[in-house]
Amino acid sequence: MHPARRLWTVLEPLHAVVYFGADVRAAGKAVGLRGFWDTYFAFRAAPLGAVGGAAVTGLFAGFEPGMVERSLPSAWTRSSPQACLDARSAVSAAALRAVGVTDDVCAAAVSLLSQLELEPTGRPIGAANAVLPLPADPVAALWQLATTVREHRGDGHVAALVTAGLSGLDALHLQTAAKGLAPEALRQVRGWSVARWEAARESLVARELLDEDGLTMVGADILESVEELTDAAAWSESLPVDEVVAKLTPAAVAVWESGVLPDGNPIGVPRPS
Image 1 (cartoon, helix red, strand yellow):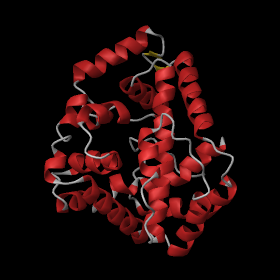
Image 2 (cartoon, helix red, strand yellow):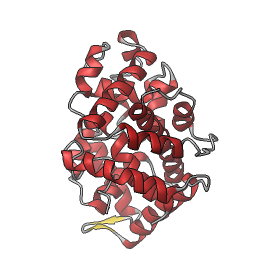
Image 3 (cartoon, rainbow, N blue to C red):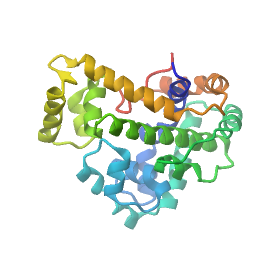
Image 4 (cartoon, rainbow, N blue to C red):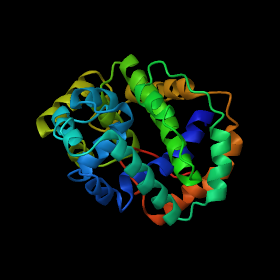
């Protein structure tokens, strides 16, 4: 497995508590947001400032535009980017501590991850996260570094999709077929109408990337090329990946074993082997 993907498999579960943690919705409401999706979009977009829905639709990829625009920019009339940054940091650190992630492990990982040199070109979400000040709390600092690395990788993944001629909606269809996810559940989670969802699938069938049995060999090859390009573009030789993975695998496993992160999750992260 590519070092960048190995790193992702341990950092993504740590980051993902900001989506799946039991107290996240309440944390959003406490700073003026209306519910889960308001909280998701505002918390994740907060490093970019009071950005609007159109920009976030393009940057996040895969969400139906109207779904995003129901939350942004109106969320910024009820809360502020700084309030969202503070809230997401606090609730994520609390969620990691609740599953047993310790200060000592986090401090050691923060020391290593702080060495990582990330190229900001074409990485708007990653770059915006990278310039945020690291909290003094080592657990919150680890969550922020994990978030910066995953968002940097995600920016590159979107670029790889565009290079392959795929939209965010196309990618949802291919990943659904490749990973055995429930298509109807994913359609609803990402806000797509049945008509738009089926039209995208028919387009992929016409391109011979999907058929009635699922992912074709051509589709699988394109999907793997996207993943390979994502890994290559996310990689930096400045990081001792083996050491980071060894230190953080127990923490990632703890998140999985707690049940916070569900199997078959829409972000597609696998359990560490």
